[in-house]
Length: 313
Ligand code: FAD
Image (cartoon, rainbow, N blue to C red; front, side, top):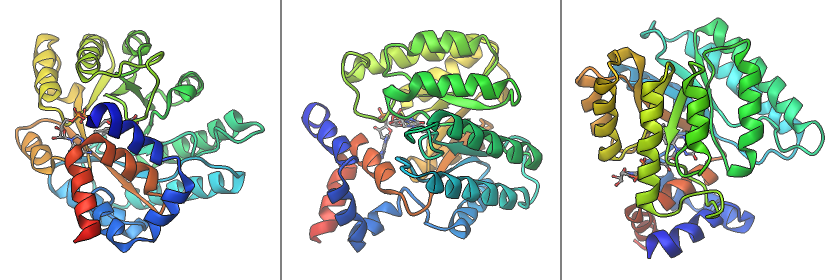
C-alpha cells in the first residue's frame, strides 16, 4: 500500500504550494526536518561538515533550492555556492577530494522561460571555476525525467573544461543503462542512485524489484568502466554488491566510493569509513528544505509515521 498509493501521493505533495506553506509554518515540522537538514545557514552547514570530516567521512553539500522562477533567485543561489566554496577552502586540510558541492540545474535557472539552459550552464560554469581554485569537487544532481537530456548535455559541455565534474544517473529510469554505458567509458565521476521523483511507468521502472535489478545492472557497468563510481544507496544489498563488484573488477579502494544522506544510517556510514572505505555524506542546508524533506518522507513508511506522531504528540 505504501509503495503503490501513499508514496506517489506524498511525492506529489512536494509540488503543492499550499501544503508547502503550511508545513513551513509548523514548528513541529522543523523539529523533524532537523534529522535530515542540519540547518538553514552557512554556519550550520560548516559545523556539520567539520563533524563529518572528523568522523572520517567526505562531504557533498547541497544548497537547497529548486523551481527557480526568476533570474535573481538563480543569481542568489550562485552567490551562496561561491561563498560556501570559499569557506570550505578554509577548512583544515582534509584528504584530497573529500570536499564537494552538489548542484541542481533548476536552482541555477534551467527552467527559466527565456535562455534557461544558457543561464544554468553559465551559472554552473562559475561555480565549477571557483570550486577548481578552492580544490572542491562538483556534482550535478538528477531531478525529474523531463530534464535529463538537457542536464546531460550541459554536463558533457562543462566536462570539456572541468573533466572531474560528476553527475547522477537514476536506476529507476529505463534509459539509465545506456547512459551508464556512455559515461562509464568516458571516465566520468557518476553517482548512481535509485531515484527519488514520482515518474510514470512509460519512462521508469516502478516496482522495487525491477528498480533494484536495474541498479545492479547499472552498477556492474560503472564498476567495469574507467570512471569513478559513486554508489549512492543505504540499501545493504547495494552496499554489499558494490564491494563485491569492486573486488571482481580489481578496483583500488580509492577508485570508487559509497554515498549516503545526512541523517540516514549514520552509524553505517562511520562503520564503513572505519573499515577503510571511502564514504561521502550528502548534506543539504538552507531555507528551501520542503521538497527535499518530502522526498525523504516518501522513501520510508517509518519516516512518515514519525512525522505524523510528532504532529499529534
Ligand atoms: P531504499 O531501498 O529506498 O532504502 C534502503 C534502506 O535505506 C531502507 O530500508 C532504510 O533502512 C534506509 N533508508 C532509505 N531511505 C531512507 C529515508 N528517507 N529515511 C530513513 N531511512 C532510509 N535521488 C535523485 O533522484 N537525484 C539525486 O541527485 C539524488 N542524489 C542522492 C545522493 C545521495 C548521496 C543519496 C544517498 C541519494 C540520492 N538520491 C537522489 C536519492 C535516491 O534516489 C533514493 O531515493 C534514496 O537514496 C533511497 O534509496 P536507497 O538506495 O537508499 O534504497
